[in-house]
Image (cartoon, rainbow, N blue to C red; front, side, top):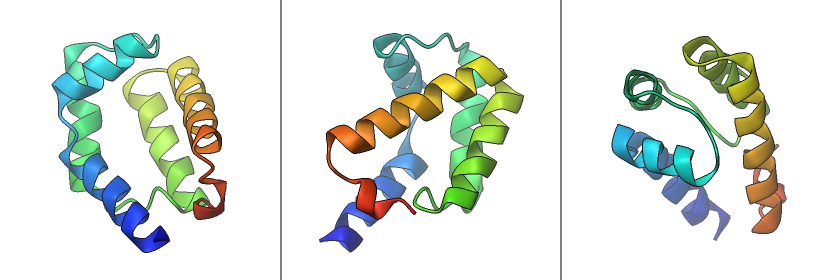
Amino acid sequence: MSTFIKEMIAKKLKQLTSDELLHYSKKYGFNLSQAEAQSITKYLKTQQIDPFSSQDRVKMLKELARITDLQTAKKAQKLFEEIIKSYGLEYLFN
């Protein structure tokens, strides 16, 4: 089952649109511009990132901080951790 879940999450990251990202940013209290959302989704689509690897998540958060700012990246990291805990998926993320 964990392989299936991992594949679903990886696929969603690759297919995420800037409009979806803007929708989620409003829902979770992030301030993103259209240009930032486009840069983030382009990064997710073009880079080989394993969201289940702590090293790759660090790279991803550094890039998010570069595109937006450090405060936004930290807030995203905190939200990410809360979401995986709320779904009981901590075991998937090393």
